[in-house]
Length: 434
Image: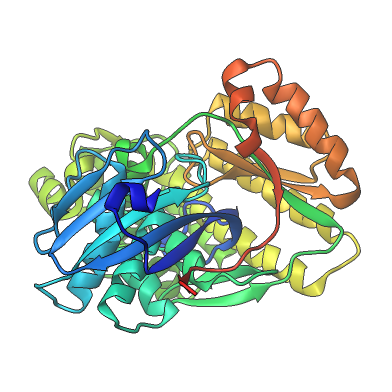
């Protein structure tokens, strides 16, 4: 197909995996650790560097039209999260990191088997793939950590204020182990999952594109406002605080104590913009111009208590999950499952990032033997991840198929890519032609 598109053959290939977040939802951009693993599904790009300064992109899926642009003046349209813009994010990130004005052109054919808008990070896999493609064409070298940090930052060109988990696991993943990803500085530690159980992905078949909705960015802003109000309440210099983790580290207290501070300092009723201003002692104009982002300026109310409560409790669940994996008690699968169930309840009730289909799917998975089941990824659609005893796997898959997919034609059509067991896969890499 490359030859048919470009009349030539590729010189190398780059692959970057999707990921499933086992636990730690919506907390990476608040500064907290998460436990994802790479899945076997990936993005693959065939690449031919060319002498012109033209970037030509094609996709094996006819749903995604070809795209061509000059390599030296990359413009990314935030108003339309088109597929090629994710490639441009990775390309531009490398270009800016090295301060290059003249970039060589390339012909790229993109292929992928990560279901789009499913919460398995197809978009970040494409950004990471493009970053590694660009680095390889330039003949430059960077560490995996540097690449992850550049790609995390550059994906924000598309308008989403993500935290870096997706790009980090795409580069730092290793076969056979999940990873505890920590931030500032970025580092990854092995988390050995218990034997005797497998993780199963089930797609709700409700698509949610993070860059196409304001929900995601509103949650980021609610967490930022909660951090500032908590910091002010505790007498800290609040104006420089951006993340909930900073409040905890400045106070030097535990996550459990932070939950008590949240109960004391914040109320459950939504905060109006005026009340946020009163809490912080600023004007509406200062709130609008100095704190709110362009895509959150129209929001009238903010749920600060619920978002902070989710983040601090979810951050504690991540540490508990890692501890259970390290200590490996006889009832490890049951304990980990319960943490996943708690996580889903918090995502549903406190963070409000679930949807009826995800809740139904989680209930079905638990009914048919999952010890734990939760939404994974941003939510509002996408996938669930379930912890299933290995000896129940085949009956579990058959029962979930029957209960969720069989009676629904559109779900059934996509089921092959929607319900599968997965094990931790490896990270992004370059494959050279023999």
